[in-house]
Image (cartoon, rainbow, N blue to C red; front, side):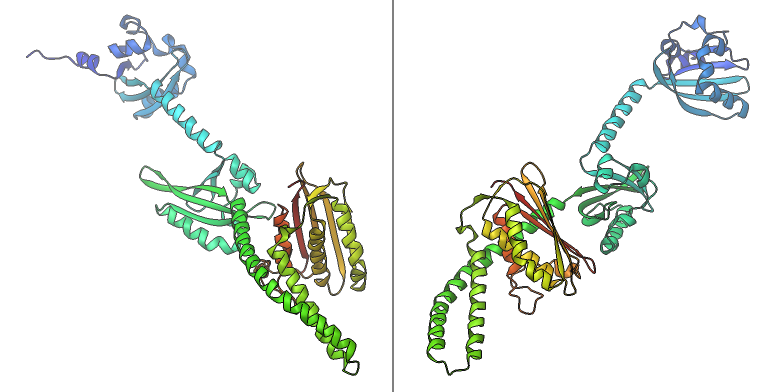
Length: 457
């Protein structure tokens, strides 16, 4: 069998290969090297690497080759060649006689890797949901633009923070538990409340998944979706269902009460007129209580049939002026000042009497919330081209979160003689007009009610 020389073996390998002596001159170049470097073998042997390829003096390759020779260590690195417009993976091994160099063209591999990296980068940066990464201690490593928009912090600010200050206090325990489960390799799906830079709590749906590098968990990816609108819609649907059920109940109760009530009131009046000697105080009490029952049935009927009236174009400024004028004496007696800021508003399709009832209910509540006096501020302005905005704010004692969540619940009231139907009637009227109402309150500072109404229904 014919013996194969080492040079023939080197010509058959798939890697490009060349050898250099101590003076950096080529002593051998295989076929693959001549093909990749676009030169014939005769143009290498005996020539100095740095003189034949002067561009390499400014490349990383120059320092790596000298490191291999001076420190007698193998080096492995990637190098881009501007003249060849190609990427190479290079491995250099020192020897007593010089340097042996193996290299491969990895241009296609680099392009594919770069393209794939761009895909991932685009998926990360352009994702409509907040996407971010955390280290194992919960510190932010990266965030996309949607994360900045969701919580109001810049990327630079995020990179100086952990997730802890951005979670509502009541949600920290659950959120932390889910984070550490993700660091243990378990994908987590949960809902929590994130805190915007301005202090606003935002309902978010979060997915946490481990970042795994070389079979080791090194961090956590997070995806957060703002579900505030979904929560509001869910709440509105729940309220709508409650209103529908109470409306049906209200209609039947009101009609059952109203008929005998009319008869009782009539006979009571006749009795008062004919029996002068009877203590009129008792009759007055009976009359007042009957009036109260009549008022309750009226509220029940509003719940049951608010659509019985016709919608007309009305001016909101007039409705507010009428109500403020009506309640001004009550406000004055309670040492309450009502400040009104009205812009020139377009007419809206509404039932004026019902909107007046809404404003009366809210202003009376505000007055009652300030037994020691205070200030009520009413603002009305055009919000968008299709909606107007009304805000009623007081300086009362405020409402706790627990009680705030119950407002609008049928028959729930904090007043000694309340029916629990006033706020529910108010909500029903607003919803019937295609609007929304939001109540926010701070203990010791007061309550703010924001109403948005469409200009046309």
